[in-house]
Image (cartoon, rainbow, N blue to C red; front, side):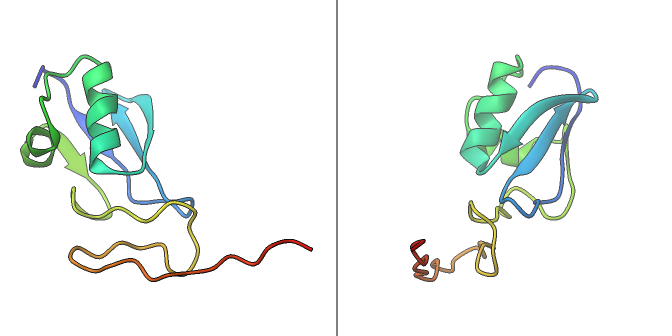
Length: 94
């Protein structure tokens, strides 16, 4: 990876984690893959998710690279490594 330090915030209620590079907001990622794309687009030399997960240049808050809430938030939004997502049906507006 190129020089610089990245910060990945704790997961938010909407299901994403904001990522910063040298105090500049890169965007919000909803998975390790999306974070990898944000960092790659910012010019860091990360080849894949393994590079990002093992990088010493990233400060993780609220959990490491394995902690990603499911999109949409809500009571069942947290992804636990190795656990399948519960099936939740959304009520249709009438």
